[in-house]
Length: 213
View 1 (cartoon, helix red, strand yellow):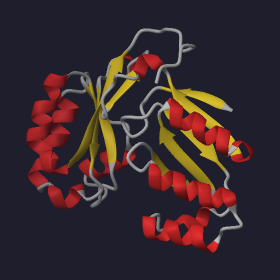
View 2: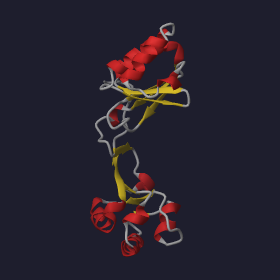
View 3: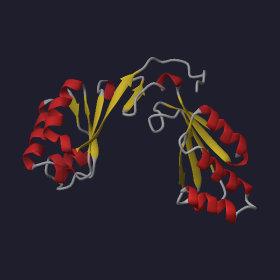
């Protein structure tokens, strides 16, 4: 099954390829030393040996992880096709980033419609924001967000309970901001507690039939 995504994997790769490979849970740790040990101990398992060789040869060209007996690779088109051809019997699915989204940065998400129709930014607070903000900073941030209700939207219950002092802990979460100019006071009030800021960028609708590497 193939899908089309709107955000680059790891901010770089357009192709995600998933396999259910035998022995994948044995590949931790994924150091060269351990992979060489697998090749030595399982010479009668060519698929495992080839996977070990592929990982060692392509560490700089792909990202990968083993999860729930699945082996997932993030790569360009060439490496994705190479993997599918070699492990065809174990291939269970792929996802591809739509070409019109391929030039977006790591913390930029392409979309045809902004969240709630108008918000360009999503501000994430750290899970331990309660130890990174003073009571005054927390109070002032909440007052700022409420005062600018037309330009800032808080829907995450973790954030609301934390800022309203209903919970002493933050547990992480996010809120939306309409324009960049509202980020400056937010940074001033909660800079240490901000985990990341995601920017949403509108892109034009277009065909995704053409695949580029």
